[in-house]
Length: 278
Image (tube, rainbow, N blue to C red):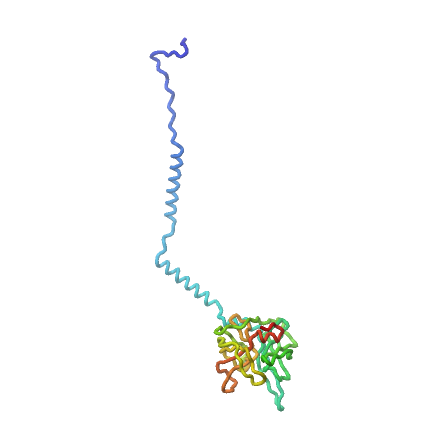
């Protein structure tokens, strides 16, 4: 029996068995991150597109130019837009005047300006007529009477006894500036619904009239107008009515156009049909 704490000489203590060493956890994490980054870098480098060449850039620029040109070709010209906008509101005005045992017929133009179907035209187109007839854009024909007249502006308002199924009033606009594009639409020399283009040459012009007082505050323009245009609309580039064609200037006193036309501003003309005058 051994006393507690005594050691026998010549009998060494038995050593405990060795445990396998563990790698620190941070080394394993670092190794995993390194492997992941390496794999990601390899994937990116193997899938990234090659930088564009000069030929690629040239092709892209050419494709963009072609697309822009195609888009521009698909946009209607301003004159076409204006004409399409006003066409449903156009009116042809025909008249009959008795005189000296003969019957004189006349031709002019007009435009529908409200939902009631009121037609604005030039007073000299219908003045003295014993019969007035209008034809709307859809072919509807009706008898018309003058319900308002402004001799000082050569403007008349017509009411009709029959309306088309769909009444399309024109959109009215303020006065255009000098140099702005304008379009005259009417029936020059009997050529139905013709459009001519020009620019505003001047504003606030005054001219003498063959019958009645001088006409003032007129828009001067250079779009071609001839007999049959009188009473028709003068349009801006959006197809909005800016004036009513009233006269053409001709120093030779002939009924053909020489480059100068005049229109009553729609703010003045429209007041005859109940619109506000500016």
